[in-house]
Amino acid sequence: MSRGITAGRRGFAHISPVPVIALSMYLNLGISQMKDSTPKGLVSCFPKPGMVRLFLITFLVLTASLEFTSRLIAAEAVDAKQLVRAAMDHWRGVTSYSEMTRTIQRPEWQRSMSMRSWSKGDKLSLVRVTEPRKDAGNGTLLKDNDMWTYSPKINRIIKIPSSMMNQGWMGSDFSNKDVSKSTDILDQYDHALTAQEEQGGHTVYTIEAIPHEDAAIVWGKETLKIRDDFVLLEEQFWDQDGELVKVMKATDIAEMGGRQVARVLRMGKVETPEEWTEMTVSEVEFDIELPAGIFTLSNLRNPRQ
Image 1 (cartoon, rainbow, N blue to C red):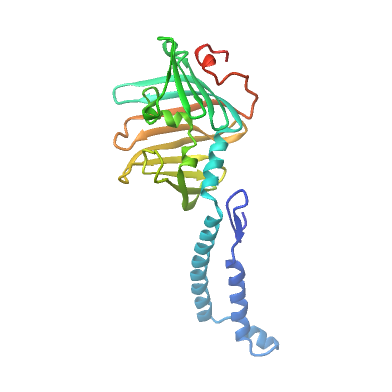
Image 2 (spheres, one colour):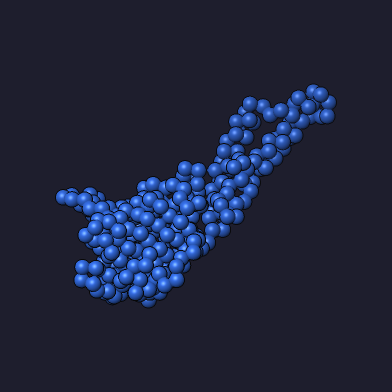
């Protein structure tokens, strides 16, 4: 990136006026010292040491001020809600298939489980456990705004009531709503861009999401950190009293399925840092053709995939 441009991605760019103003200042300073057009007069146009110091101080002050202003202008050009939308679409694709391992860490024990996942758009997803053998076949289906689980041990499909969507999914630190990848964060929140910073060669945007007053949301607010290539780096969950409750972080990012994705996501509560749940993706494909009937209660009970 050239020195005269401050830019994000996807058109979030503008030209900084600092180099132009600096050059103009320097030339005007020299011309003001010129006594005539003779060679002697030309030599006289070079600023004296004291004037050079004044120029440098003024230049530094202007640089800081104008660059700060330019960052504000760039920030205002970013639509916070659209950035959240883009991050969700980036992770989901039009359709997706993935294989992952979920690990629950507790002070006394650690438990891992392998699973497969399919998704289509915002409203359809299926997660099925493959290992360990005693848990194989357990599944979770999201269809529209409804969620069901299936347990082979009792051969029963159970619909999850809305009152239980914020409870832990299969005993983990991820809630049922987290696993469902709900669009509530888009539909029931107002969004504001509160900060941006350069990190590892990327611009990282911080977005504050506040629930609508009439929204049936348990959180007081959520804070998201999204990279300029739409990778969600962190999501913070705050209660109604303004206390930070839990945090999800991308602890490893890699190119998978033809795009940069969070390969490892860790969710944990602030008050118990020694307890957490990690989702580690080992394989992912995006924008693929999925079999008909995959997102049905029949397929949840009797897998065809």
